Length: 218
Image (cartoon, rainbow, N blue to C red; front, side):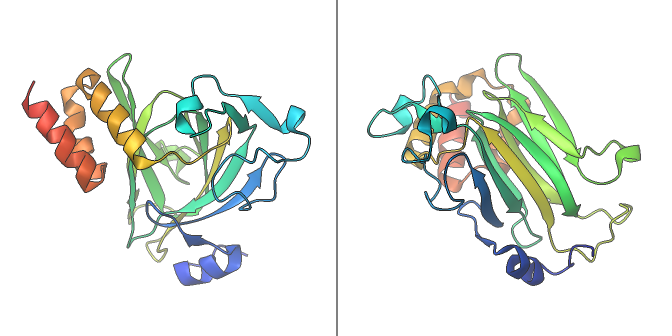
């Protein structure tokens, strides 16, 4: 049976909840833990921690206790919608793989601060038009993106969302926004100037103000 076109039907079927950054999500896997049981934090009390936890060196400042351990792997469904179509600008600390599961297409903008290169990738069903069924984003890269309502796509415009699978290794652990803000402002000067547009469009209002001010000083 194909995915239902209405987001209300999908949220019920997959038990999705609102994502803090937009759209809907549900955690489907966290090494050694029941999904959703840790509320986005590392499950240090997981079963067999010698197997299900790895040391993510350099991540200690992301936790108040300084612990660098992370669950080996996490996975979620993330579902941006027509009403909430954007992926806000963020840095990947871990490797991410994004999988197309159905619905509309989604465009990613991926920036490498070491090389100054930005690439665009479309996660979607039309592989003959250059769409990818997987988009891989290495740790250390920045990304943002948005939903695409494409009338020429093999999936018609009746869908209200795209359903994306996201695997993260080492596993995802939520970082407080003020840490992201501090780090983001510190490294902004390394960005290629063509990325200013994406900072403005895909950042939170606070990040946008900080970064536009910073760029005006260059």
